[in-house]
Image 1 (tube, rainbow, N blue to C red):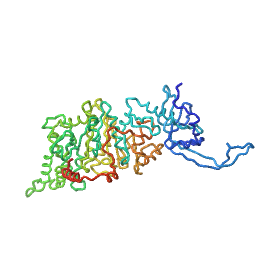
Image 2 (cartoon, rainbow, N blue to C red):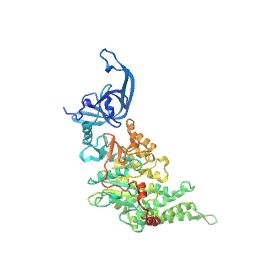
Image 3 (tube, rainbow, N blue to C red):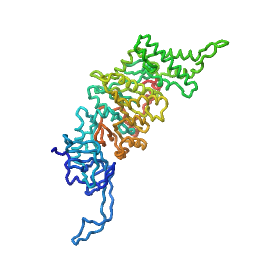
Image 4 (cartoon, rainbow, N blue to C red):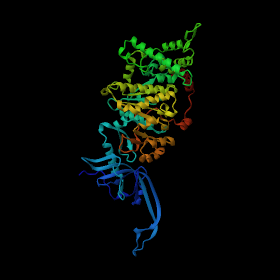
Length: 580
């Protein structure tokens, strides 16, 4: 018979089970001295039906009270039973799993969930010292070596490494949630650092503030950096500038940017735009003799068309005439497209949207899209598999559209690829609340982005695409997307609305664990989900390359640092140029 890794003696005995319901167990403590050594979050083991089985739980509450009763343990020599105060200690336990010394042909196993509930009067033991260390090591050992993702150490036992199952973490979507300064960027950098050690990682980070640029610098760089082109990049294209030309946008995405739905002529404007774009794309395919594509393309197919020709066609409609009884009269579209044309012209001429409407000539080539997709997907000896895409210069009003277009493009490449050729891809959505809001609060551009990301959340796993959602305001992030995440690393959260969102996402029996969220230190978090057997509190390792997200030392700098007046002047000029 296999030897159990859990060996309890009298010093580990807490008491016996006094109450059981479907969610929790209450144990009456008999060894009252033990109450000073246990705390909320500590692990306990309850004897199961067999001697080789223990139900593992987490202490959710510890209470002590005094009552007056006969002290049967203090009978005097004459047989008198005194009447006095007695302690009553109880702990409330959330069951999380089952440990078995022997489980079929396997030994020393742990599985999440309790197959049975404990019986009244079953012994309850504290998991501490060598038992705790052995149990934590068992959790790590059950993850195959090649699939381990080390994140830090368990707070319950700082000698035990907290290891998540890498496959389960990424393939079933994940979320990193925490208030400002809680260590979200640390966590992302650490996970990217772990992934970079693999031979062919494939992660694309949507970096909203450029804080992960440090991961792309120096000899120890683990990622390749791209940047959504700013106004300055349109003048002198750099190798890492990323353009997303207007013809990549589908019909709904373009109309979300330039169509005013409140305009009474909006249906006419949308109709003429759609018809002209379809014909211009058809003309492009005919010129290139792409008959196979010509037979099946749609208005949403990513095919180049000349936007100046589109403007010319719209102007002809807006100024057009038709024969009348006494001479030419206004055409069917005359005057109905004026505002639409003005809005489109404003977008085209605005340098901030240069990455969309003023891309270099090379983007009009038929092969351009394949080349840029291969750069984003490639992972090998000469190219980093982790790509950081800096969105910091993208105007806020089109940020959701741009993020959604890029995500949709990446997903569609995977979707249309042969199943055996797909290489798994994870999209890291930094500051997700900026472009993936709750649907009821989303405007037209944000709804277009939500459509792309929600499709990935629902169907991406089938095609090798997953999401890693990062946000400081989970209450502002799409419920659909968060509900599809099966792994959560929850750092400090102080806002009660954000805490309630997290509580709704974890099983009811474990919701009590989230009460500690406001008290977590920087870099501490609760790791929950499919990737780890034991939902528990961990301390993250510090990444070797820290992101540029450190909180400034306001008081110290006010006291010791002189403001740089020339820097202010330089910033003003940079703001005028709209490029760093």
